[in-house]
Image (cartoon, rainbow, N blue to C red; front, side):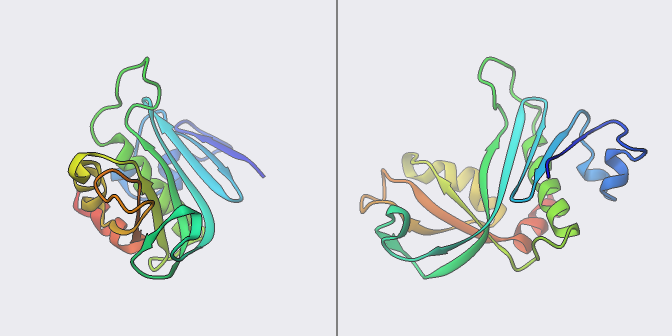
Length: 171
């Protein structure tokens, strides 16, 4: 089943009715919900969360170094403040609000819990600046490296839903 929600009225209820917290109100938000993912877009920002259990251990998915064996429940597949490079970047904070709102929807649906583990794969950046600037503040920690060169490799990062929602409240 595919569900598309918009910021306007839909079957008698609005975006604000769907979530009880004003901090997540985003004008023009579009939500596509399927059984295994949720995609949220607004103002050229985009967030995709994939609901799937993945088992992480050394040599799995090409990772040569995994800090610990663990199971994740949700994957942050995309978080962009400027999804379409030909358009203006979304206003500051919109991608974060979309991410937080997507987690709240899944939590309210009982699809995930505060203990659920979120993973993402961070692209290489000099001195891990992408991880330090974007992902660490959200609670992510490095769990694995795709190859043995830690300065020029994709990193597996993880956090919990609870840690992320705490970050959402503090922002």
